[in-house]
Length: 319
Ligand code: AMP
Image 1: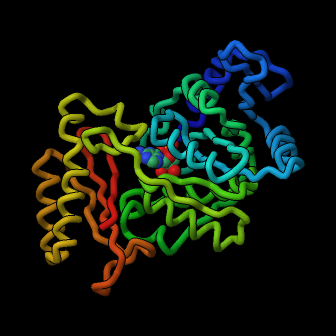
Image 2: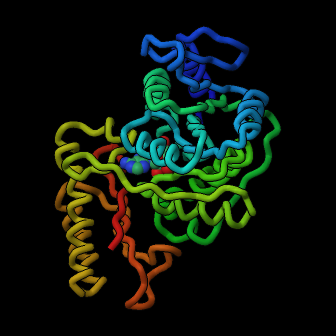
């Protein structure tokens, strides 16, 4: 974990906001539409009291609220989540927080892409209502001592087998975000399918008011799932990367055609390695529980994680 680096980055990001500050911790801008009436409402909120005030304003007008949690470096996949949120609620808050608690010491927290100014511009263009961008110190103040350790889908031996502390970091930050923002709905991408199941279980188990909604994966024209980490790919790696989705689709087709699960997975694993990946896993699991398949009628999700060069990619498809 390198919180120092993160704080510096977030401070830099703060300086990138060119809009005049109306109050401490709040920034508003007018959209470049030439019309004051069309002023964007998006606030960049950095402190909890202002978040609470904003939410109280929304609620006072009986508005429903959707939350879209992100780590920034926004791409079209994130923006699709925002559009879905706008269809599901009156007001949309997008959080941008690179959560140190979900990165292992050897992972890419220090170099995780941070494109705050562009993120804000994209969210304002979409007329997002609020942007919750807390600092690490706001989320994890000195003396912070609580961690949520999820079980069930978080122990499915998929991502958790390779990133043992990842879902505790995710569950803790997501629980905090849901308690802070009190949304009616929260949108999570199917791109991180195990995470979607973990968060759904968390909201249910903790009796949170929020309904968790999954959003379909947005892909490049060649099938590669959009990811903030795709920018790490060299051009030969980028050329090889669509193999992951191609193999998932072929494997799903073979399963639908009635081929045996074991041989479909063996063929798929070999094809992924032939394409130049080091495979972490390719598994067929129960689409809801993520448990190993037990019955022919089980709904199936195929999930893959594989490394190419220094980049680790994940993807999944329904069968
Ligand atoms: P991240 O910023 O990577 O933590 O992602 C924030 C949210 O965006 C998560 O719910 C992701 O599952 C979702 N997301 C990321 N990439 C995609 C994609 N290609 N399509 C749909 N949702 C995505």
